[in-house]
Length: 206
Image (cartoon, rainbow, N blue to C red; front, side, top):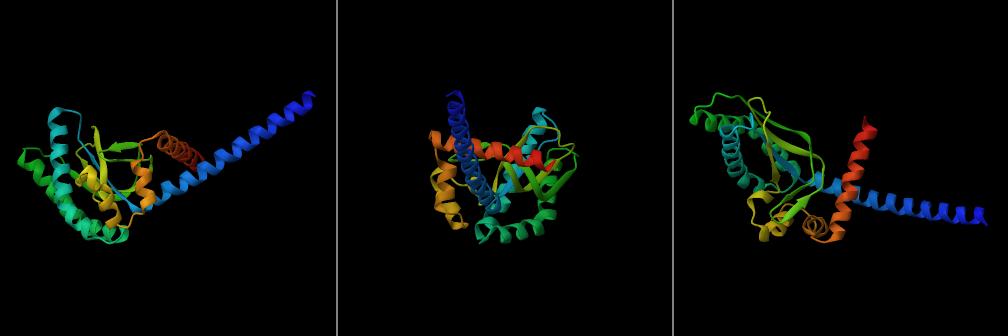
């Protein structure tokens, strides 16, 4: 009798494990699709001083204003990626101009490279943690608090009510946008699975 009960428990655990694996795999697929269609923006301040944090935000505003029209004109992430790569010297220069106008001699690096991002909530949408292609603007020692957003599609320049329209114009599917904009418990479960799977994938990679 005890053996029979234990077997039932084993079966129940195996079924639960299978459901978790299936759900995790589906969530990971959704995450990968989002990552493949986006370019994030990552601006890192020299330090956490009030002055450096203010400069970081000024650089952010300049970069977003510069990239918005180019990103809206890009029909795919590949096009956006190419446009940003060509613009890296100009982005670096405009960030340096902001610093020099404020009597700051810090250096600036502008890179387009994969980077890890945490789970992040924005105005009108959320994104799971994971590795995304990113336009990274590093100021000085790049040791201060950073600022994350999305440069392609240009969602951070869109009003919350325009996120869906902006995403669709840049090739995103309704399902992907719905995942980003869900506010219920299902959303939390999906993104938690994504976060756990991303951690597992990083651990296995090490």
